[in-house]
Length: 340
Image (cartoon, rainbow, N blue to C red; front, side, top):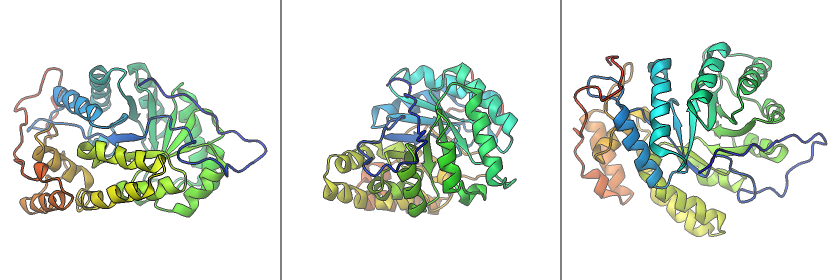
């Protein structure tokens, strides 16, 4: 897969995109992307070889792209150096087989720009930029922040709207104005407000990606193009089949797949998503390792519930795995020395 093509959303006349559907709206980063966990050794050090194995697995199982160092990648607890080394390792592993997006968002515009420029130098294909969290900037601040980040590199930008975590939503009018920037091309939508998302898609060319797996099919119905998922660590192929069925006009088939995956969509988020994503990877025998504090690993009771959810969705082959998994005892070649 080649780097995304920039598609401008500028429309001075303010015309609505009444005829633009999920099938006709450009999907600049592909249809199915996974917000990839960051594998660690049992002592909490960065596991680069595990990250490369996991990235290769994901690309081979339905994923068009990967988001590295997003929240699911535990970006709040990885250093800038670790982020760069992780990104370079994943790019080396997947080559041109997938789009690799670097999560660079922080609540400091200057720091976000530094991360964005480092990611560009490392070879990233795009940037995921979350709304600045905790400081609750006004909409004028969001406009300035996102525009400055987009101006700082030549990479296409995916905005990440998740007010449940950041405490600040990107309002529709702000989103439409940001869409005028030639490099702001997409949104990871975890707001859950379909009316607002509908209006933004009607007034811009922004490609909407569901940031909440259970909302992927409903968002497709109003014009979204894909998903940045977490259960897609194990169910990328099934998610892609659901999206493809919808785009091909097989709404009934897409709905059947959506309903089959519902226990998974629920199961991965009964507690913090990274915690159960890594537990699921251990069940599947894939690299993941522990989480770093302040997160804590899944309890035996939580893992048992996850097994039941996987079985309910018809994926007993994953539910039968061993949660002890295979974790490297020492940092792999090039891994960091940080202890979790």
